Image (cartoon, rainbow, N blue to C red):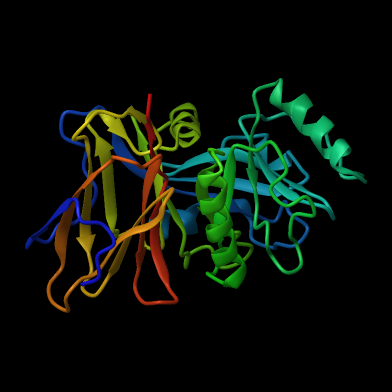
Length: 326
């Protein structure tokens, strides 16, 4: 076991858990969703929207955002079914940048953009109407953001479809943005255009109810983590009453509590702060367990967690808890 931090207490609890339940003494429970997928309302998909919905339920989602390219036609009716909430979404697709837009059902089309000023003016107009924005696959070899991260967005899609080097670069870039003080919420999306049954990106969101408003509010607050399976792992992180995404006021002796349920053998656990990798541990090769960790917050501006199945394959990442030193 390799340790980068000496002020911690780690405990392995030999139990097997299934499913995510409500947090103790908390109004929150966790729902799983895909924030980026397409139907035949997009020019590059031939899957009817009712198939997308049914297959998404089979894939283990509680909600999805159907984000068809530059159209609102798929928003004209509510496509939700029992057991699956469909959130209206819109992928603003141009040669310069791809951005998902949430929170609106009426979105004027504007695809002829030639500069960052054009994009900023369009987004600012939508922002005044209450829109939320996600920067999609910013380092994709073909569909990358020509403006890098120099856009006023709320969410950053780190994992897009299949984990590749460009996603890993986005993960590294996101960490550096956090170090610089920028609070971008980390998300993920499958970007599914065809087979919607086999999916590998799940946004786990802490909500008080299963509704569009509650999900978007929780995402905006950063109360979420991303996994590659609907079966976990399940990550809970708090400082007192403050959950991931929130800000805790630093006090001497303060600890962040991290609990990971339904974690598989040989999982690599990494805890990062603004100082870099604080702590790393590879679990032994035996039964599924719950892993608990207490870490002192002294000197840290944020704390976040990544889980890897091996050196190349990420299986989960959390949004940070922020620590404010007064």
